[in-house]
Image 1 (cartoon, rainbow, N blue to C red):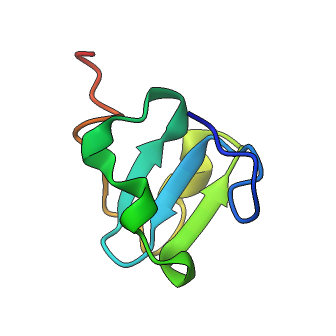
Image 2 (cartoon, one colour):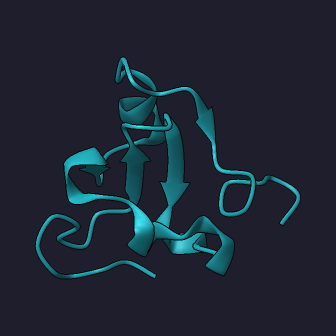
Length: 70
């Protein structure tokens, strides 16, 4: 679920810069644990997923919210 408050501002993708895992808030799963990510580790984007992939801290998609088998 997209979050409308500060930092997220309704953006779709969230990158945990600490772990390198990208999350899709339109398909968020409870196992994503978005609320557990420290604010200094967040990078949010409402652009294409390709924007997240360009970040140097990006490593992989989340297995829960970005699983193509869902």
